[in-house]
Length: 388
Ligand SMILES: C[S@@+](CC[C@H](N)C(=O)[O-])C[C@H]1O[C@@H](n2cnc3c(N)ncnc32)[C@H](O)[C@@H]1O
Image 1 (tube, helix red, strand yellow):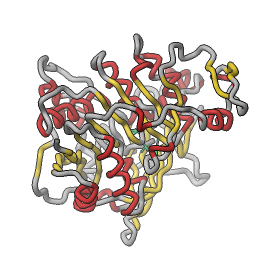
Image 2 (cartoon, helix red, strand yellow; image 1 turned 120 degrees about the horizontal axis):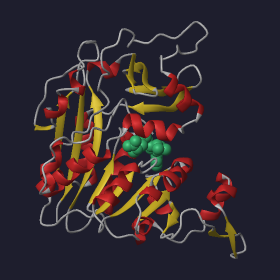
Image 3 (cartoon, helix red, strand yellow; image 1 turned 180 degrees about the vertical axis):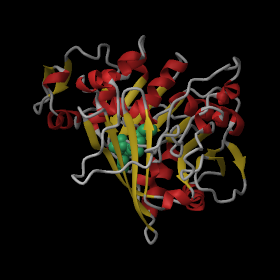
Image 4 (cartoon, protein in one colour; image 1 turned 30 degrees about the horizontal axis):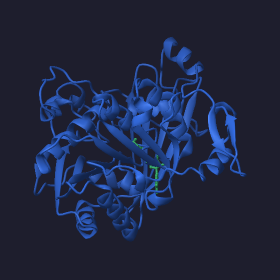
């Protein structure tokens, strides 16, 4: 899980009509900076503890309620409506001829995007793939249950490695009731009823090894996506190409697109700390020194809920920060016929006054570019097109 500061903004004056009109639902990104405060460059105390963020009494009560790190992450970082809006636009632009219905969200974490996809059209289906069983289970209990209707019959959550999708196991498929007993196979092939709360991860993992539904059996996808810089989790070029090949092969033979995001700019290659205040908590993106030999960066996400609770290192990543040309080359090698980069300059991370992102940034959109001069910070969508 993780992103340097992606925040969902609801559309204002959203135009109806076709999907391409929806791109005024602007997804924000890693480089959003918080509104100006005097202590944005937050310091740690000598004890190593983070200082209190000054949340009010409401924040204390909220902290005492112990919100999950996944919940905090989704509030701080994700903007699924914006991502869906852009994916639809890209699909209609580069493939066209039909409305995209089938999505695969790789590195899905809590699969918030997949759940939003299901809500956006009753014909839509989604597949989510992630290594983190805790995140997938959290999705079942906290996101998927909000989709309603036949939502759970339209999603397949797969626990596994995107590099070996054939081995991924369905966490839950076409289940009628998310909280009732779940029939799982025991080692002898017999069925036993186990409630969600009674299971621990090892039990679940073991039992689901026998799950018969595999990714190859699912319908081909119109769109495969990997957001919040997830491709940076793959550190070797051969793994990146292998992953892109799997994404390519998952796409419909009628044509489809792969969409991923990436951040960059001068500020991405140095030590940095960014904070964003929310009404009840503060989100902190911490970036360690940048290793230019291996292009490796270590990222930690912290959540401050006042003195009562600080969740340090709620999420930590060891990423290889790929460059745009590297990604482009690997996508071509994997078989994609054309690759398109859509980019937006982000507010300078060094400019403490630059908080316009939250007030006037709505009309700053991603633009298709063939070249782009380096900035302090930028965010990009990369679209690989698999034609008919
Ligand atoms: C940066 S988070 C992104 C989560 C989500 N896509 C989002 O938009 O917030 C990266 C996710 O990738 C998962 N992950 C990392 N390596 C993976 C792999 N090889 N296969 C599947 N999932 C992986 C992690 O468990 C984590 O949930």
